[in-house]
Length: 181
Image 1 (tube, rainbow, N blue to C red):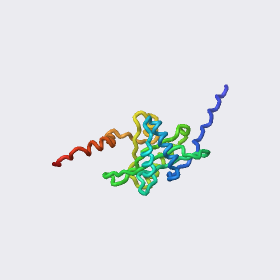
Image 2: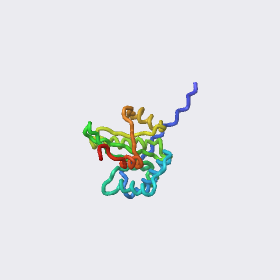
Image 3: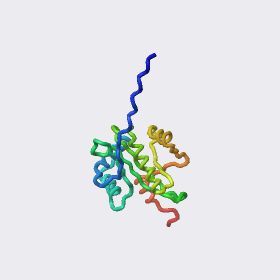
Image 4: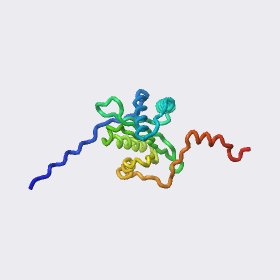
């Protein structure tokens, strides 16, 4: 009786390090944001938006926290995440919101995205957040599967995301407020 050949050994994920981004990382951070825009088939930030991203991340009053992932042998980061806090009035606790998690294509399936997600949950626990929230594009079924099957996250069906862009905000604000003469 002949033995089947042994399956190839499972390759462990590549090692990587995570750290908060600094102003010195601004160019590499913007490059990854642009790569995410291309992945999502969206227009990348224009020059003015890029300047706002840098100011909002690294200025005197940061509006969000960018984190970067590095792998050995690569000078530039290969992934990033953006975290920010919102607040739940019912829980009376902050919520850590994940705006982006993006891993550059050659470095996917190495645990880096999961590492960034784990960092978000770790930060939320340290900060005594009541929850961690994020959205996923409807076509990104691979991400949805990971979130639901591997993490145990629940897709919220009772809440709908609504959005007003600058155009809608300006239209709304140009209307006369209810009850005004």
